Amino acid sequence: MKKKLNDFNKKLENLKKLNSKIKNQKKNKDFKDFGTFLKLGVELISAIIVGLVIGLFLDNYFQSKPIFLFIF
Image 1 (cartoon, helix red, strand yellow):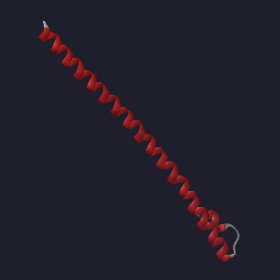
Image 2 (image 1 turned 120 degrees about the vertical axis):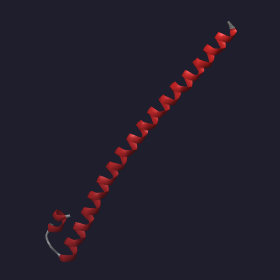
Image 3 (image 1 turned 90 degrees about the horizontal axis):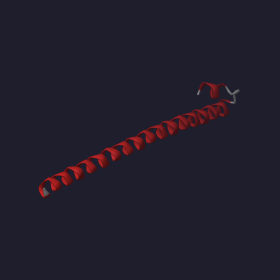
Image 4 (image 1 turned 180 degrees about the horizontal axis):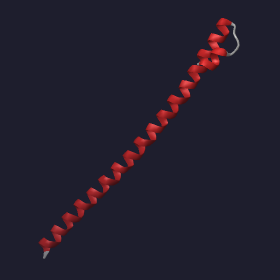
């Protein structure tokens, strides 16, 4: 009887460990997805800022209307 109870307890502990591993993997995936979207947003904003700076610089350099601002 004690052997069956010990076996049951071992199986229960193994299932608890497996369950906690699965939960941790899901949390890690959620954070990874958040990081991907954060990186995407930063790259988009930085590209807009760089294009704006280049366009304004070229417009000032050639003393033109904001034509380079629209190109970049």
